[in-house]
Length: 111
Image (cartoon, rainbow, N blue to C red; front, side, top):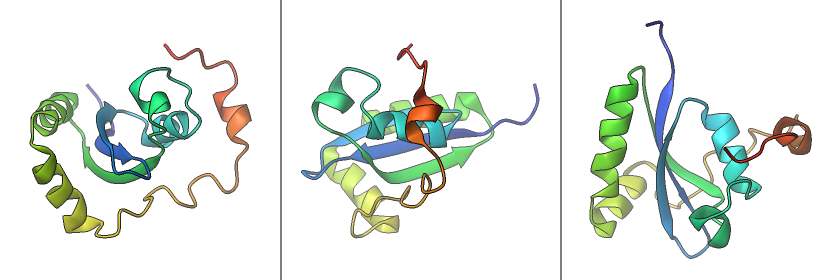
């Protein structure tokens, strides 16, 4: 198996609701959250701000870490986020300045 990029990430909204996920394409996945492509929790609560992420080259490690974080108490997640992102800034700010998000997401069916 070749080298790949895997990310465990946390997204949030204006009221600091936290969503934890895993992906092999953080740029596309964050864009999907921002535009509410996937119906469900993240679109219902407008979870559209990347506040934390970790990289690994192992899908097994990424899934294990995602499960660990999902089982954490909210206060632990907040402490982790604030250890690297005290102000809950959107870490993806500027990522999409030079693209047309609608072109990137065209044809994406949410599956």
